Amino acid sequence: MTELSDNAVYTSQIKLTDSINYTDGYILNSDNWANYVVGAITAIRHVGSALSNNKVFSGQLAHELNHSINTIDLEQPLPNMDAALEEVNSLYLSNAVYFQNPKYVAHLNCAVAYPGVIAEQILTAVNSSLDTYDGSGAGTLIEQKIIDWTADKIGFSHNADGVFTSGGSQSNLMALLLARDNFALTSLNESIKDVGITDNCRRFKIFTSSVCHFTIKKSAAILGLGFDSVISIPVDSNFKMDLHELERSIEKTIEEGGIPICIVGTAGTTDYGSVDPLDGIAPICKKYDMWFHVDAAYGCGLLVSQKHKEKLNGISHADSVTVDYHKSFLQPTSCSAFYVKDRQKLSLLTYHAEYLNPLQNDTEKTPNLVDKSLQTTRRFDALKLWLTLRVMGSENIGKVFDSAIELAGDVYELLMGDDEFEVIHSPETSAVVFRYFNKKYSNEKLNKINYSIKEHCFYAGNCAIASTKFKGIQYLKFTILNPTTTYEDIVEILSEIKSHAYLIQSQKEYMD
Ligand SMILES: Cc1ncc(COP(=O)(O)O)c(C=O)c1O
Image (cartoon, rainbow, N blue to C red; front, side, top):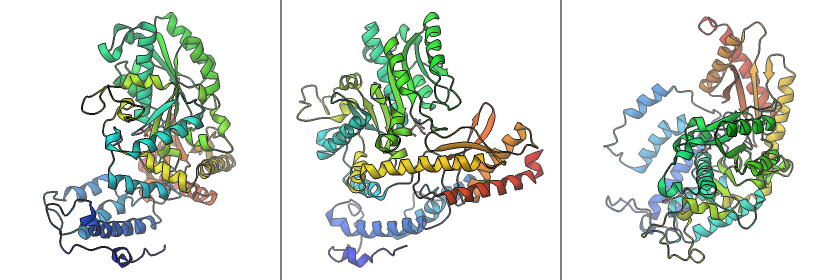
């Protein structure tokens, strides 16, 4: 690892304060600049050495870590920044989970591109708030430019709009909120925003595949529709929504007095990476006058892919789309956005507060993004993607997602050729679901072995893999997002999985 330049280089033109004034000495401004720079350099050094560690995780158990963290007395500050950063190093950096490690192939957390991290430092230092133009200035316009750029990639017209959110969970909630309120207003002449949930809402139904993200159900509950308003449509052998079953289920719902309001297609299911047949869902939405939401939290990387963009065919017909740049655009969390085809629909979310975004405001001259957001004070996360696009370019982000898809295909072939593994699907994007297999054992025993393998890997700390269940069978999962993960890394992880499997089989406590 290259040694970072000496502090002196950074501090030669600035005046270091000898001692900190305990009332205003910590405020980030030009007077205290030197303290900030020296602290930041020390922090970066700690991060640098943490990143050079080969381990994904220290293997510490939660209760062991909890003890060290709980003994800290928060009423007693440490003598200086160096000491506090040492403490952060030993408590956090030494025991964090490192998504940058090529052998982290567990959940939908990505390795980050460094321009995104540099932008994070800028936006945090300035601390803009993107609710209003008078809280952000240029930040509002930069976010809007990123929104327009992505809407164009989705294939939406100039009539589209969107806003940055805290993540896919919030974006999915916004989608169902708009689906609910738009249907009530346009089909039933009921304004839920004004009068709240009506009797008709109890009959509203949302259709989505059985392997959609759990936030669809959670959002339905938050919106007063309840888990039961979400109708789960079976998937085919490629984990894509079965369109025949979808139409059958909509017809049945109508017969039973339900009111179908929305279909959620997933572009990149959390476990399997499968993309629902979006171009087949679109005409069904049209036929039944339903809102079409596409949850592309994971599959949004396809928007900039050179090789696989066609997997998203049909997305431009959606009424709304969830995009998580912090999954497949190499961005630090949070960096996500929510899009609508028709910008007018976002007015269902608008509230005019006199102190913030009064009605008489001329939105053309002074845009206030709070008009279309669930949040008020809001981070300038768009700057991270902006800087990454300006340095790395969208084509290179697309290449990273393409390479992850290619590696997933190679991993599938590798697993298929090995009797000790059983693969459940041929990957469509970058997730591969499989299990360790030994024909000597029942599914019940194999479930135990496979779950323990995942745990053993995590606590050994050399790699991190995920697990999931389908039809009662416990599987293991690789989610590949990191361009530095190689085929050889995967071979080593599979060899480690086998070693854990053999050890587990030799241990009575697991096998009884
Ligand atoms: C398909 C899908 N949608 C939504 C989400 C939720 O996104 P977030 O964690 O950014 O809130 C996830 C998270 O993994 C996801 O996989």
